[in-house]
Every structure is written in C-alpha cells, then in structure tokens.
Length: 132
Image (cartoon, rainbow, N blue to C red; front, side, top):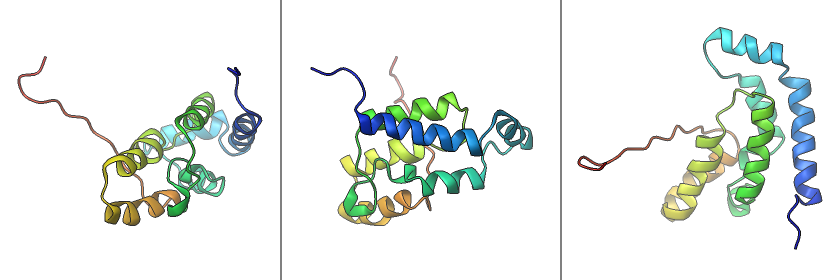
C-alpha cells in the first residue's frame, strides 16, 4: 500500500508552487494585504488559467473532478505561498455542497461558473438555538 502522493499529485504541487513563486512573491502578498482587499484579480486569473478553479467541479461541468486529496495538496501549496485567494469556500466547499446536495439545475448553473473562475463564494456556518 502506497502512503505517499502520486506522481500526478506531486506535479500538481510543483506546478502550482512554481506559479506562485513567480506570481505571488512575499512582497506581492504584502502589497495585497496592505491594500486592504485581501484579494488580487491578477493572481486569481492566473490560478484559473492553471485549472485550480475547476479542481472540485466535475468534468461534465467543465472542471477537473478531482478528490479531497488533490484539494489538500493545493491548499498546502497555497498556504505555503500565503496566497491571498478564495480557495476553501469558493473552490472546495461550494462545489462539494452543490455536487452533494444541489439540484441538477443548481449544479448546471453554478458549477461551470465556479470551474471557469467566474463565481466566488463565501461559506458561513450557523448553529441552532439551544445547542451547546
């Protein structure tokens, strides 16, 4: 049994790491943070071109249809680079929620837009009154 990353997963991390090194240096990240937006459209567009936006959207919706392991590889690489992008909510949680519980119409509307980098989501969690 293999407990390491596959060659494809290693290539994903290396490719994304190289992209971030060239497009999201620490100075760039600091400038984005200082601007107060916490987001950079140019960096986002570059990640979309890398295919990261379609990570969790199925192939039938224009995505890559990869697994949580690939999402973890991408998250680690983005975290290492301190990349200021809407990753967890927009590119992992929202597509998973749509795939697992969205209607066919919702999936057909939103998953292609997520995969194309056209839609970004924020995700919120709420508890119910009386729960501890």
